[in-house]
Image (cartoon, rainbow, N blue to C red; front, side, top):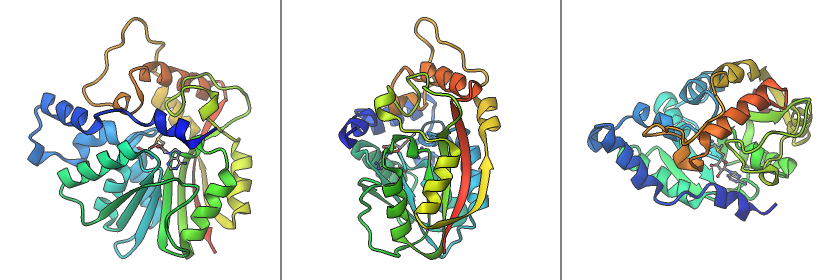
Length: 274
Ligand SMILES: C[S@@+](CC[C@H](N)C(=O)[O-])C[C@H]1O[C@@H](n2cnc3c(N)ncnc32)[C@H](O)[C@@H]1O
């Protein structure tokens, strides 16, 4: 599957303007927009900002560090990390539209000094060896078929002794998945491996696993109320449907089924470049 196909999925038109329209409808003055105002749309992962804050606490990332986020979307977690941990962050994503939106939202929040965004592929990181003091990736491995190449790239750009934080959707015991899901319209864009296989790929890239938490039960709770939509579902003013389409409720319902039927799991991990 070509990256172009994945890129198209994550290319909504006029995203920044649609977010600004949403903020206006919510009565927010642009000069007063906060990280919390954007969280419903810019933290596009299971358990959103709550999970990001847990990852920050777990990561040990500190103010003097330069952290790489791979698959940063429109930058919500990168901005939260820079704000909470005080570190410098570089966010990278395949989607040019997402990266443009990430830059403009970061300017809107007056945070451009702390965070840089780059449009590129996780499989060919445009950075030298041993560049970063840490890295994280939040729910993007699902779109990566060549996971060994992705993890080897992360290993290459990290300094020895630094940590890679992963919060990632994996497969489970049953296949296939119910589609569409939030990260893919069909199985041509989704490449899940079970947690044990994922562990092996991480270790084969040279990392030593320090932390491995199964977060599937929390994901099940998050999606327990997701119902099969009927008619035209009502959507919130700001939400992840702005990123991946108006069928988001069908995607959420299918994710619920995939979690409950042991087709999908969720892991949180820390891996060390020794
Ligand atoms: C489910 S979204 C999660 C976005 C972000 N991490 C968040 O939590 O808001 C997956 C992201 O991975 C990005 N992505 C997929 N394949 C990629 C690749 N090969 N290189 C870089 N980014 C990629 C997509 O463009 C998308 O922004």
